[in-house]
Image (tube, rainbow, N blue to C red):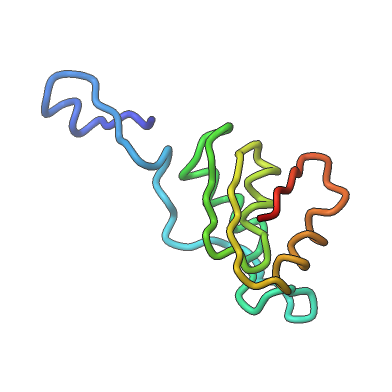
Amino acid sequence: MRYDEKKSVETGSDCYMSGCKGMLPTEFDVQAVARKDRIHQSELPISLCEQILDFVTYEGEVVLDSFVGSGVVGEAALMMKRNCILIEILKENVEKIKNRFEGKTWSQMVEC
């Protein structure tokens, strides 16, 4: 965890911030996914997901995406050596997500 200098000075002992491993920036400099390349209407750029995951998770932690959509959060998590649980109710989206993960050596899918 990140060292909390202000609280450490106030209390006289070492204190660390919980939650994020860093302060999130107020804006991210990433390009939106082009409409022609999207597999879901609200698809996020993978670089954005990677940046956010880098701030809020550590390697080996589990990322839960309960409304997967395009699967980009899961792909970013696995690329960054995080485990992930993806939940998607729409069968047509599940097929698109399976295609996204196809051929990737780090993916292991269990379908319920």
